[in-house]
Length: 334
Ligand SMILES: NC(=O)c1ccc[n+]([C@@H]2O[C@H](COP(=O)([O-])OP(=O)(O)OC[C@H]3O[C@@H](n4cnc5c(N)ncnc54)[C@H](O)[C@@H]3O)[C@@H](O)[C@H]2O)c1
Image 1: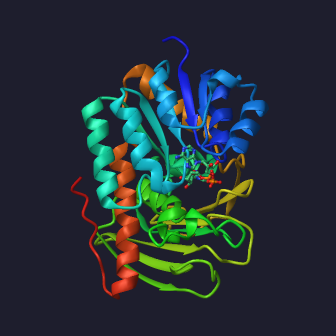
Image 2 (image 1 turned 180 degrees about the vertical axis):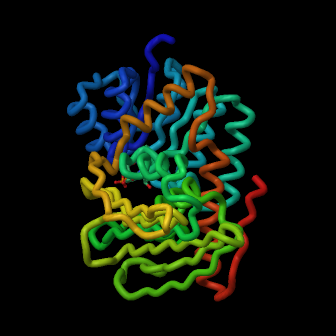
């Protein structure tokens, strides 16, 4: 295949995608940001000439000479911009969370289906080295059967929240917590029921709970827990613990080691093993590589539109459970 020509829309976190795409040999054929200063900054930083810089994605699209777009604008605009590119026959890598409502997720699935193009949702934790290694250990049976999985999204939003992140639709469980939810879905499957509690103690700027804990039922033998705090007084991390019948794994996305406990035939635990792992909690290069491979080979993407929508569905179910004080069963009929 010829060099993939990519447009990147939204140039804050989108700059990580420019680097990811360039690192895979793709050509940055156009960039777009509605903010003139952000557009200029990214253009100069990556040497993108003036004629390839756009303030409006529609003008970029009208030019037509791109294969794919990365959509890294505020979550509320994911549907509009992703659908516009899909409808124009372009492949799309859209940032997480795919959407903030079921209606938007459904519209994006329909646009992807109708276009026959790839829509990948940027659930980047699936490319975090520690979590890739955790997935490989689980799949190889190193932990036996999982009976409890937990993950957390602990990220203090105190300084970054006074904008579109304060929208009530952009609850912390869907905005950032979708990383932990998606990780548990990847490792443990789709939960059939969730029950959650929330509190609001730390972030005066937002109308939603700033801490939520959710218990998940995967099946009769497997349970899970997600903890989300967007006001926590600590460094960002996603501590994750996987408990299986043959072993336990403790890992996160911010430390260079993970700890593996396994047991012998007699069921007695061995000394824990420390496994070294690269720290890269925003592995945009691997993520883009996976997107580009799917386009080149016509293969499915790991986090396609339905995968992205299922994660949205679990997040919304958790938010609804905490509000209603009762268990909620996610509906995966997309
Ligand atoms: N994968 C991750 O870990 C991760 C990390 C950070 C952000 N994100 C996601 O990336 C997206 C962007 O987040 P951010 O932190 O960069 O937000 P931000 O508010 O810092 O930046 C958004 C950028 O998009 C531009 N923009 C807004 N509307 C636009 C439009 N209609 N057309 C073109 N440009 C527009 C803004 O001017 C701004 O430069 C969000 O969906 C967010 O959830 C993901």
